[in-house]
Amino acid sequence: MHPILFKLGPFEIRSWGVAFAISCVMGTWFAQRRARHQGINPNLIMNLALIIIGSALVGSRLFYVVFHWEEFAPHPWDIISPYQSTGQWGIGGLSMLGGIILSVLVSLLYLHLKGENIWKVTDIVAPSFPLGIFFTRLGCFLSGCCFGKPSSLPFAVTFPTQSPAGFVYPHCPLHPTQLYSSLYGLGGFFFLLYLKRYKSFSGFTTWLMIGFYCLARFLIDFLRYYEESMILTKIGGVSLSVNQGVCLVTILIAGVGWNLLRIRERCGSARRS
Figure (tube, one colour):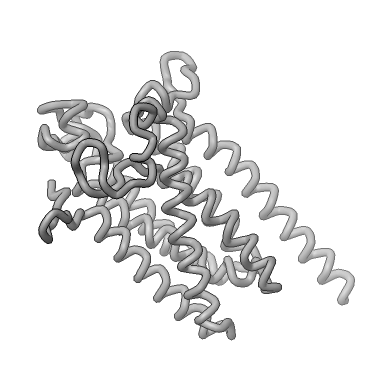
C-alpha cells in the first residue's frame, strides 16, 4: 500500500487526497462536456462542482464524527484542525455516504435558488458521481482504509500492519472492498450512460444513480468491516451497518422519486396531446 505518495517538508501528499482530486477534476470535466451538448452553461457546472466538493467533504467528516465521537471527545479541535493532536498533519476519518447525502441536498437547494431546471442539470451531473467513486476508492485501497472482513478467496489482500486494515486484522487476507466499490463505480458510470437511450423524463438518470449507488453499497457492506459503533442491528447473526440502514431508506426514496417524475411526465404528455 502507498498511503503517502511523497512529502513536502512537514506536509504529506496522501494517495487518497490525490485520488479524490482526480475524481473531482474528471467528474467536473465530464459533466461540463455533457452540459455543452445539452445547452447548459458549463460555468454553472463548475460552480455546482465546487459546491458539491465542499459539501461532500463536510458531510463525509460530520457523518464519520457522529459515529466515532469517542475518538474526538478528548480533542474536539481535531474535527476541523489540519494539525491533529497525534502530531500529524491532515484530517483523517471520512464517510463517503455522508458526503453524498449532503452534496445531493445542497446541490438541489443551490439549483432551486438559481431558478434552474433541477432535474435536467442533475441528470447531466449524475454519471460523474460513480466516476468519482471509481477513482476515490482506489485511493482508499492505497491507504488501506474502508477495508473488508477476513476472506479465503484467492484475490483477498493482506494489508501492511501500519495501515488501518493491517492494524485491525494483522497478517490476515481481507476482502478488497475498496476495489469492489471502485468497480461498481466504473460499472455504474457506463450503466447510466447506456440507459441514456431509454431516458423519457428529467430526473430519470438522477434517481437511477442514487438508487444504484445505494443498492451496490448495501450489498458490498456485508463484506466490509465496521466498528461496533457503526452496527445498526444484527439479524440472525448478520450485522447491518448504519450505512446499510441509510441505503435502504434512500433506495425507497429513489424509487418513489423516480416514479413520481415518471407519472408527472406521462400526465403532462397526456394534457399536451
